[in-house]
Image (cartoon, rainbow, N blue to C red; front, side, top):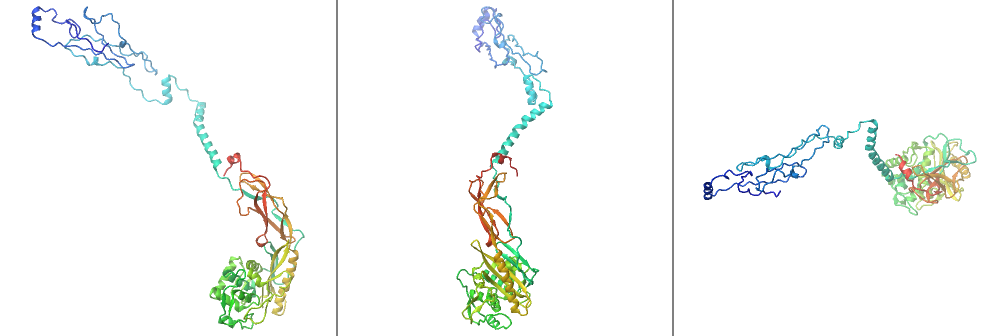
Length: 557
């Protein structure tokens, strides 16, 4: 047990038995003393086996009495014990046992120790083939897997898919919460139109020619006649003035650049069969003075002079006139000269009212056409306006025009006061020919126009369309929520008997908020367009709340 065996006693060989020379005679002993001989020494190395492995112990036989070696009665040591093999698989026999320890007979001293005795015998087991996880678990527990069934398959699928479904639901909820909310919008719930009382409007339309009347910013009061392109004579100069002011605008008291009278304009000023201005070559007039000569006495030579000054040639200016007409939506108008002397320059009443609305936005133009007469340095006498009704109450002028093909024509403006505000009425009479002389034809068109002006001034009125506090619509949050909005003040519309006006509910140029307090202004309601447009702010009737969790979660799209 100490690991190193003691040297053999005298009389024992290396294997523990009696030595061969123990019974020799004395002579042999003497001989041995004379010749010293190395005696082989046998060493027994006790190997301590590893844990849980069966070992083979060397069992030494008992020697003679008094030899100091163990006896036959000595019991086996712990190293001779073996482990018991318990199978986990049914195909391994349970009777398999670990190899028993073997006894080693004493060997002669000269013999070497067999290799089998140098180290303990080990138990060897063949490796098992790899098994699926469930089968391996069954092998280890010695419990066979349950037989497959639809229920077990369904449960297993539920266990597999449930975590994935829960993860997808969590991602969906988070995505719905962080998605931007749809932009709120104002929706009109009140009646979209309002009709003025009083029955049908009755205008004193002339029995010849064609024309139209319109209240600026409100709508048309009606038309008469064929509404087809026809010569417009000097009414053409309205487009000439519009192009000049568009390209060279004048503000306030400005008079504009000085323009020199060329030889051609001076010579044309002496023409006998057309309206002209007596200008002299080399004279200079401001832009505003030439516009006065263009619109008040209707000077053809000044119209051509302005065309050459603006575009370089009359032909180039005519191209600009037609381009401007196209921009204004005058689809039935054609301009062939800047003065209107040519019968090929044609237009319709509706097209001329489109031009009138555009050119009357210039302050200097309104000032000029509303002037009954004017005096200009360098021009002898006082220049009178051909529109003789300019002195009538509320009557303004734009442009007269007459020729044999065109008859008498007048493009006019008038004003009326409604609820303390000035309202502009625009109209035109074309093709007045029921007279012998050209001057009488022009006078006839002026008379027709004045009758229309008086009736329009009488019939144009106002009526309350929206009351203060009236619910007009709601804020739609895009997810089903609707918060009502109300008018903050009374709103009156301008119109006439039988007119139907439309209400429009807008945000007023500002984005509608997602939340707000009752009374917060969120938009406006308006009636009409342009200069005749009237509006009133609208406010929240109740608090506006942002959509809740349930609406955010269930929204689609």
